[in-house]
Length: 217
Image (cartoon, rainbow, N blue to C red; front, side, top):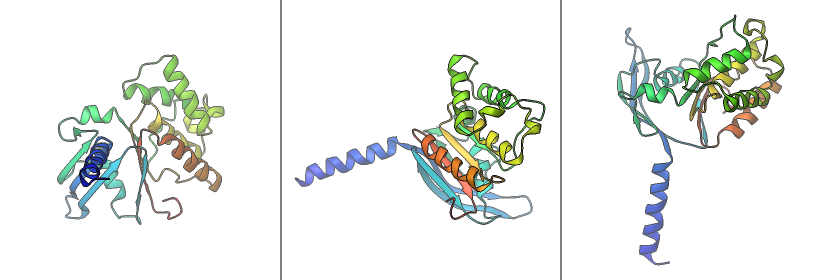
């Protein structure tokens, strides 16, 4: 092929890459009031259809990074862009596209598993209807919680509560999933089942998963 043809192909590939660019973090820094630097000058580019693993020991800054991206914590310096939106000025819109599974399960003991799914779907702007019911039923089936859909969350085991936390992150058509050590408290079988499920769900999504397990990463 001619050199000009190769240049055209290169430009086209670069254009596709930029169009597929889901999250850009530049010079991200977080310093707490006591002077501790939790995150220092972090640069990342992440794309849809990927599972991005943040691997590191406890205290490495994984949870802080996820909390900043989700909007739970404010950054000290740097910039974050998600699906072309500015994190500083368009955070409300960004939050509707994000599903978060934090380290501590956001579980309401008096609500059932199914009611949790409905609640988080509404938070993301989805109204009850046939489509959201199908989505909820599918997610609960895939994550092995369908048989617990009418159970009060307070009666679930630790591993099942963790599954519910992941399920609420998935519901509502989330384009970006922030999963902070999602397999914590699960047995070996449940962990591997979760990994296979996330591989299936990564289509048209960016999944950011923090872990300190090398085999999980």
